[in-house]
Image: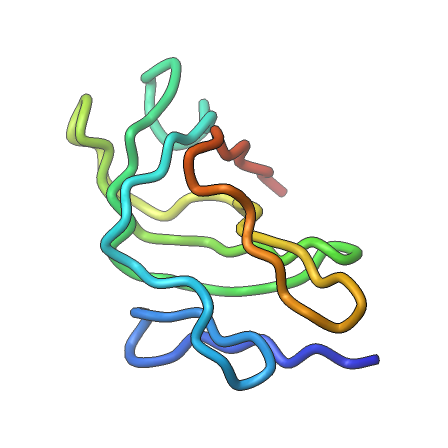
Length: 102
């Protein structure tokens, strides 16, 4: 089964199978030593740069700002959900997200 992933509205939404599923303007707790020097970044997600899939896991790269240190930039790959039985299931937004660098 194929899952269609797209960035919509100039980076404001991630679409999964033509449904807007994940939006910007959220605060994510992020374990991302490659992004900034904070132990855990409190990242304000400003735009989605790319969306992809790793197995069944849906991942994004975002441009954002750490509200702790002020660092801005583009992250590595961050998981936002997974596809199960053809349906997108978003990960709990309160959990710490771990960045994957290539």
